[in-house]
Length: 310
Ligand SMILES: NC(=O)c1ccc[n+]([C@@H]2O[C@H](COP(=O)([O-])OP(=O)(O)OC[C@H]3O[C@@H](n4cnc5c(N)ncnc54)[C@H](OP(=O)(O)O)[C@@H]3O)[C@@H](O)[C@H]2O)c1
Image (cartoon, rainbow, N blue to C red; front, side):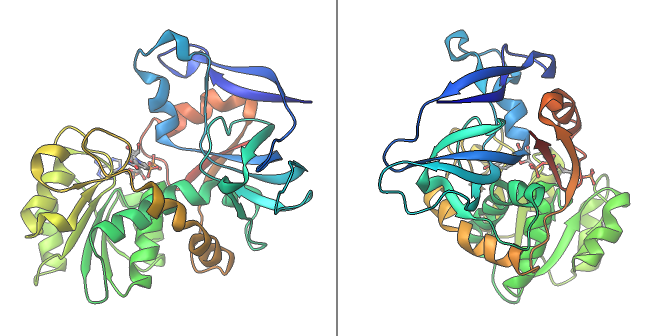
């Protein structure tokens, strides 16, 4: 038995509902391992999971889908060993000091990544892979990425050129130098976006990825991309189902893509470990300050990943 501290939503609403609770973990069973968490990735979905009133019987709600850490115990027939450095994704309740998880959620942590980078890699990275696969991005394509400076966006911006595509990336002005450094052509979002993109790509845009969920991202994508199968959204669950585009993720009418996302893990780890995919960590917070981390991610203007340190 091991005591673990974990962050939960004790009620529905804002980050003031977050509390640190102590729980006792059982020994890992067959196919399970215990992991001592070194870092846990924060995602907008964590905030959304308790923002609206929900079923009171689900409280307290464990938070967090991804972490990095060290294996501290293994169940029968485990194929990993105590001391192995791993990334855990996808699990639930990753905002914790210790976790017992299925071995199937583990990816070996590449040596080239530190703990926060490793914790922030896979949810955003696998989502980005899903958007590129769903829209068939390939060599010679020009791709418009809305929300390019966010956790998912920075992955899409780096992964699309590895497929031979050119990236036009929307972001606030302060993120343009970073996007240029990553090989993308940044444009400011807001009024006149379609014209600014046309000026950069007079021959047209082949695919668009809406990673922000605004009406502008949807409207400009529909205006500039002829084939709706080559427009993906991970965030506009209001209009996505009506517009005939590829709606991706866990929501009504969306393609969850679980298998594809899980299959993307080894290659994402390889690319990141080799330095071919950068994980940009915007800030780290102690586990006990998860509420502040949630206030930050909820601004919708974080550049890169927010990570919690137990
Ligand atoms: N369906 C799925 O499977 C799935 C998976 C992961 C994430 N998501 C969703 O996808 C969205 C993005 O996730 P994330 O982790 O990348 O979020 P994030 O890290 O918080 O990034 C948000 C980014 O959006 C940009 N942004 C804000 N307003 C914008 C606008 N009007 N136009 C263009 N860009 C704008 C910001 O850039 P500036 O600072 O430059 O404004 C910021 O970098 C969230 O809604 C999240 O819940 C869905």
